[in-house]
Image 1 (cartoon, helix red, strand yellow):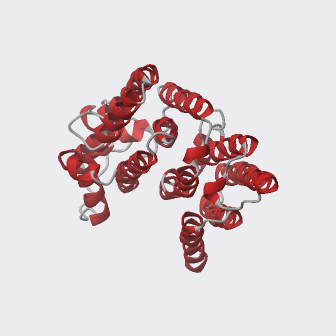
Image 2 (tube, rainbow, N blue to C red):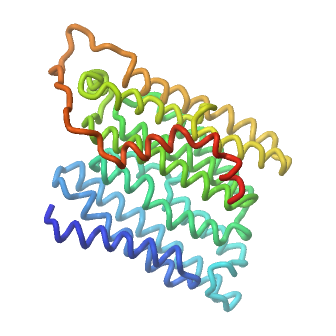
Image 3 (cartoon, helix red, strand yellow):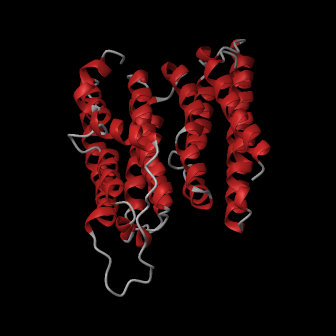
Length: 346
């Protein structure tokens, strides 16, 4: 891809995100979302592979439909209340439409079908952007309108996302698809708590983004996109694969690691809100995710390649691991002891 085109796309991504997260007016928030959508499309389709082009078209169609719904919801609200302010969304139909639109933007169930396909058609770095940075503006809109959202609809979508994200990830052999379903399951955890504790949703999103960044950067270094290539990647970078295993277990939410913190806090908050049933269901559903994370961790470090492997045995990578991987993996593994300090921000 032309460096100038890549620079313009990257700057447009930053600009679109900044406009949306700093705006109070619906039209400005919508403009930021549109700039973001148009900026990521060249990055998705840059490989010129038919699957990448298909992913770009799917992404464009879904995001265009979601943006139309956002605009319709805000216009309908302004028509009935005279307010264009983001925090003044009070009309019930507009609230319902906005919840649907943001669900489409994020890939919440039942609007999740595009997300695994788009991630599978993208490169690992673009998939990282789609899983983290592209989710930030819609989550910010949810954060600002959280007081007027429909709790029943959001809880139903959240539990369905956690269930489907865990269930569909069990059967996959492509790592990007597994991480896409993992993202859908994590969005379920964020959506269930947004009405009761919006700051906790943001904290969950930040920690999820951190851990996912560590996993994607590591996979990009070892060039693993399928489970079969992951089985032989330990010969390339043994230490990096060991930290990848810990990052994956952190993403699963196992106790000594950073990923346990948001799940612990969400279950605690749901119990305070007397939603014990929802807390129990979503905690049980996270076991489905734990299974496929354990499978990924097993493939990355514990499995030795069989003698009749179809893959060429790979050489050690002698170049040093980049500092972004070192920083993100360290933070995604070791932040739990700092939870009292982190809790002061929530």
